[in-house]
Image (cartoon, rainbow, N blue to C red; front, top):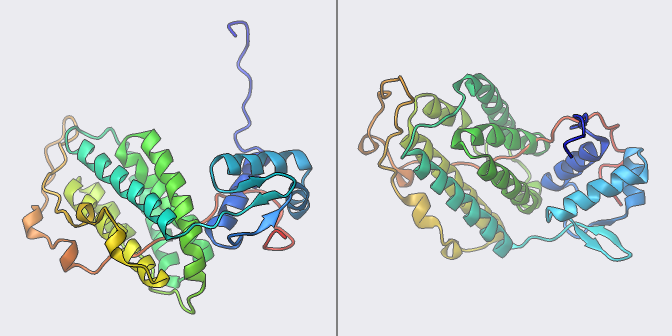
Length: 291
C-alpha cells in the first residue's frame, strides 16, 4: 500500500444517489412495507444501469432497510410495534448517555455551526407546522444530523441516524393515514437550538426528552398500543440536574436552574419529526412507487 498515490474518491456516486433516493422513499412511506422489486425495476425507474442500482439495493439491505430474497429481488420489511420499541429505546438510551457524558467534560462542538443548525431548525419546524410529510422527513433527518454534532461522538451520531431512518419507516404509514398533519408534529426545534447556544445542557436534554416522550405517545395512540411496554419512560421523565462545563476560556453561561423550569410532566409533549432526502441529481422517477 505504501507505493500507492492518493486516489480520488467520488463521494456522491450514482450508487449513493440511488440509495439516498430510495432511503427517502422508505422513510416517507412511499415504498410501503411488503413492497417487492427487482434490480431491473429500480434501474428502469431511475434511468440508470443495473450495476449502481444493484449496489444501492445491496447497501440498503446491509443496513437492514431492505430484505434481500433469493430469486425475488428486494422487499421492504414490515416493522411492528416491538421493532419500533427496540429502535426507540436504543435512541433514548444513546441520547441520555450522550448528554450525561457531556455533563462531565467541555464539548468540543464547533460553535460556528450554530447558524447552519438554526437554518435546519427553521426548515424542520416549517415543514412540521405545514404538515408536509414528504418534506418533513428530509428536514427532520437533516436537523437531527446537524444537531448530533453537539454530542461530540461521530459513532453515536451515525447510529442515531440509522435508528431515525427506521423510526420513520415505522411511523410514516400511520401518519400518512391521517387526514390532516398540520400542527400535529413537533415544531420546537428552534427552542432546542437556543438552549444549545446558551450552553444550557440540562434544558436541551429536557427538551429532547420531551420530544421523545411525545413521539412514543403519538405513535402509541396511532397504533392502539399501550405505553406500559415502553421500558425507557423513567429516563424520559427524569429531571436533568447538571449544567454543562464552560468551554475553555469562557465563563459559565447564566442559565436558569432546573428547579426554575417546568419538567416534562408540566409541559405539552413534544412532537415527532420527519425528514427530507439528501439532494440528488437523479432524474425524477416516472412512478413514485417501485412496482
